[in-house]
Image 1 (cartoon, rainbow, N blue to C red):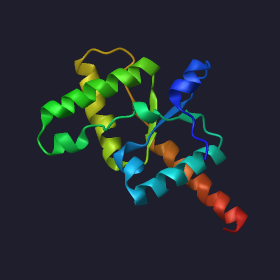
Image 2 (image 1 turned 90 degrees about the horizontal axis):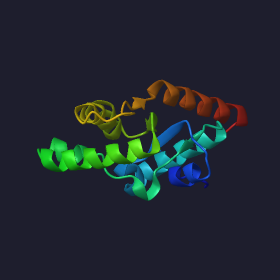
Image 3 (image 1 turned 90 degrees about the vertical axis):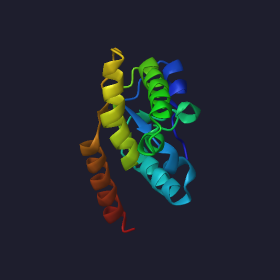
Length: 144
Protein backbone atom coordinates (compact mmCIF):
# COMPACT_ATOMS: atom_id res chain seq x y z
CA UNK A 1 0.00 0.00 0.00
CA UNK A 2 1.43 3.32 -1.06
CA UNK A 3 1.19 6.11 1.52
CA UNK A 4 2.76 9.49 0.73
CA UNK A 5 5.11 10.99 3.34
CA UNK A 6 4.87 14.75 3.76
CA UNK A 7 8.63 15.38 3.95
CA UNK A 8 9.19 13.48 0.68
CA UNK A 9 6.41 15.33 -1.14
CA UNK A 10 7.64 18.71 0.11
CA UNK A 11 11.21 17.91 -0.99
CA UNK A 12 9.80 17.27 -4.49
CA UNK A 13 7.93 20.58 -4.46
CA UNK A 14 4.53 19.00 -3.89
CA UNK A 15 2.06 20.42 -1.40
CA UNK A 16 -0.75 17.99 -0.47
CA UNK A 17 -4.08 19.45 0.52
CA UNK A 18 -4.47 17.33 3.66
CA UNK A 19 -2.33 15.90 6.38
CA UNK A 20 -3.70 12.53 7.50
CA UNK A 21 -2.94 12.35 11.23
CA UNK A 22 -2.85 8.63 12.00
CA UNK A 23 -2.54 8.77 15.78
CA UNK A 24 -1.18 6.28 18.29
CA UNK A 25 -4.05 3.81 18.07
CA UNK A 26 -4.04 3.91 14.27
CA UNK A 27 -0.33 3.14 14.31
CA UNK A 28 -0.09 0.49 17.02
CA UNK A 29 -3.47 -1.07 17.89
CA UNK A 30 -4.27 -4.01 15.58
CA UNK A 31 -7.97 -3.16 15.22
CA UNK A 32 -7.26 0.54 14.65
CA UNK A 33 -4.58 -0.30 12.07
CA UNK A 34 -7.35 -1.89 9.98
CA UNK A 35 -9.27 1.40 10.10
CA UNK A 36 -6.13 3.31 9.11
CA UNK A 37 -5.48 1.00 6.14
CA UNK A 38 -9.11 1.20 5.03
CA UNK A 39 -9.06 5.00 5.23
CA UNK A 40 -5.85 5.15 3.19
CA UNK A 41 -7.53 2.98 0.55
CA UNK A 42 -10.44 5.42 0.47
CA UNK A 43 -8.12 8.42 0.15
CA UNK A 44 -6.20 6.75 -2.67
CA UNK A 45 -9.32 5.58 -4.50
CA UNK A 46 -10.86 9.05 -4.26
CA UNK A 47 -7.62 10.65 -5.54
CA UNK A 48 -7.36 12.88 -2.48
CA UNK A 49 -4.16 14.89 -2.18
CA UNK A 50 -2.81 13.88 1.23
CA UNK A 51 0.28 12.82 3.10
CA UNK A 52 1.26 11.56 6.53
CA UNK A 53 4.07 12.70 8.78
CA UNK A 54 5.45 9.18 9.12
CA UNK A 55 8.22 9.04 11.71
CA UNK A 56 7.73 12.74 12.45
CA UNK A 57 4.24 12.14 13.85
CA UNK A 58 4.16 12.09 17.62
CA UNK A 59 1.40 11.48 20.13
CA UNK A 60 -0.88 14.50 20.49
CA UNK A 61 -0.41 14.31 24.25
CA UNK A 62 -4.09 13.62 24.91
CA UNK A 63 -3.43 10.70 27.30
CA UNK A 64 -1.01 12.85 29.31
CA UNK A 65 -3.46 15.74 29.54
CA UNK A 66 -6.39 13.52 30.52
CA UNK A 67 -4.32 11.85 33.24
CA UNK A 68 -3.31 15.23 34.68
CA UNK A 69 0.23 15.56 33.32
CA UNK A 70 -0.14 19.06 31.90
CA UNK A 71 3.63 19.53 31.61
CA UNK A 72 4.04 16.51 29.32
CA UNK A 73 1.02 17.61 27.29
CA UNK A 74 2.49 21.10 26.85
CA UNK A 75 5.80 19.61 25.65
CA UNK A 76 3.99 17.37 23.13
CA UNK A 77 1.84 20.28 21.96
CA UNK A 78 4.83 22.57 21.39
CA UNK A 79 6.66 19.84 19.48
CA UNK A 80 3.63 19.03 17.31
CA UNK A 81 2.93 22.69 16.57
CA UNK A 82 6.54 23.16 15.45
CA UNK A 83 6.31 20.19 13.07
CA UNK A 84 2.94 21.25 11.65
CA UNK A 85 4.07 24.84 11.16
CA UNK A 86 7.36 23.78 9.58
CA UNK A 87 5.34 22.17 6.78
CA UNK A 88 2.67 24.87 6.63
CA UNK A 89 -0.09 22.37 7.44
CA UNK A 90 -3.56 23.91 7.39
CA UNK A 91 -5.95 21.00 6.84
CA UNK A 92 -5.86 17.84 8.90
CA UNK A 93 -7.99 14.72 8.69
CA UNK A 94 -7.91 11.91 11.21
CA UNK A 95 -9.88 8.81 12.04
CA UNK A 96 -9.05 9.05 15.76
CA UNK A 97 -11.61 10.92 17.89
CA UNK A 98 -9.01 11.68 20.58
CA UNK A 99 -6.56 13.15 18.08
CA UNK A 100 -9.42 15.08 16.48
CA UNK A 101 -10.40 16.67 19.79
CA UNK A 102 -6.84 17.46 20.82
CA UNK A 103 -5.79 18.99 17.50
CA UNK A 104 -9.02 20.93 17.01
CA UNK A 105 -9.34 22.28 20.53
CA UNK A 106 -6.05 22.00 22.37
CA UNK A 107 -3.40 22.53 19.68
CA UNK A 108 -5.25 25.44 18.11
CA UNK A 109 -5.52 27.08 21.52
CA UNK A 110 -1.87 26.34 22.36
CA UNK A 111 -0.62 27.72 19.04
CA UNK A 112 -2.57 30.95 19.54
CA UNK A 113 -0.98 31.30 22.99
CA UNK A 114 2.44 30.97 21.36
CA UNK A 115 1.48 33.62 18.78
CA UNK A 116 2.57 31.16 16.11
CA UNK A 117 1.87 32.20 12.54
CA UNK A 118 0.12 29.74 10.22
CA UNK A 119 -1.33 28.08 13.26
CA UNK A 120 -5.02 27.43 12.77
CA UNK A 121 -5.51 23.77 11.99
CA UNK A 122 -8.78 23.00 10.27
CA UNK A 123 -10.24 19.60 11.04
CA UNK A 124 -12.22 18.29 8.11
CA UNK A 125 -15.00 16.12 9.42
CA UNK A 126 -17.33 17.05 6.57
CA UNK A 127 -14.68 15.95 4.08
CA UNK A 128 -14.22 12.69 6.00
CA UNK A 129 -17.97 12.15 5.85
CA UNK A 130 -17.93 12.72 2.08
CA UNK A 131 -15.09 10.22 1.74
CA UNK A 132 -17.04 7.61 3.68
CA UNK A 133 -20.06 8.18 1.41
CA UNK A 134 -17.74 7.80 -1.59
CA UNK A 135 -16.37 4.52 -0.19
CA UNK A 136 -19.85 3.14 0.43
CA UNK A 137 -20.91 4.04 -3.10
CA UNK A 138 -17.79 2.40 -4.53
CA UNK A 139 -18.46 -0.74 -2.51
CA UNK A 140 -22.08 -0.90 -3.64
CA UNK A 141 -21.14 -0.28 -7.27
CA UNK A 142 -18.53 -3.05 -7.20
CA UNK A 143 -20.86 -5.53 -5.48
CA UNK A 144 -18.51 -6.05 -2.50
